[in-house]
Each structure stands twice: as C-alpha cells, then as structure tokens.
Length: 128
Image (cartoon, rainbow, N blue to C red; front, side):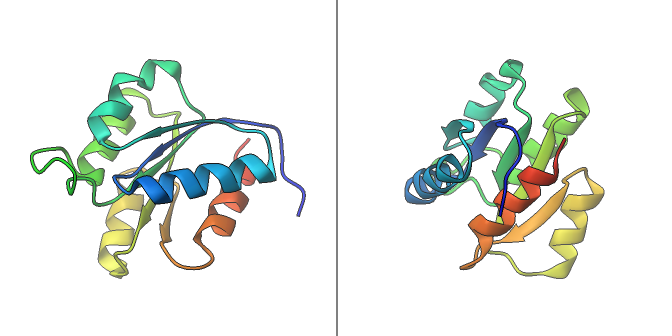
C-alpha cells in the first residue's frame, strides 16, 4: 500500500509500549514527524505545534488517576483546534462509546486489535 505525504502526528496513550510500537510502524510506512505523550495534558501543552493528526486513547488516566480521559481531551481539542484530525484508539468495543466519540468530533474510532496499526496508517493516508 502506498502512503501519502508525511504528517505531524501526536500519539497520546498511557501505554508506553504501544506508543513506541505505533510510532515505529508509522515511521516505517512513511517518514512522519511523530511525538508521543502519555497524558492528555502533555498533549495539550504541545498542541500549539499544530499536529495534522492526533491518535488519542479513550482511557488515559491509568498513569495519573486525576488526569483527563480521552473524551475530555477530544472535546478540548475540537473546541480550540477544530481542524486537527483526531483518531480515537481504544480497547473499548462498545458501539455507543465509539459513536459518542465520533459525535464529539473524532474522525474515526479504532479498536486496539491486531489490525489497529494498519487501520490507523490507512486513515492517516486518507487525510489531506
């Protein structure tokens, strides 16, 4: 599969192994400028860098219990930076949650499974 031009991407997930693996995968597919953050607050501290895409975990508060969750961060991003594309990533398979994130502005909702990285790369490629 051919992938488009490089994009600035933020990966926001409290799972360090996942952020590293996803970053490596996307770098191999196309030379993206990738930054990883383990809390939504860290992401928001760097949002002025204006990423093209943010891959955002639905559950973010396992590292820091009082941290904002993915839905709260999504709403903040879309309120202040509506042009930034957000792809929600979660192990949560409930249809209602997926629909809620899309209604709040996420481009897509990707379930963490064996095809998740490939799906994310394809979605990023579709973003112009």
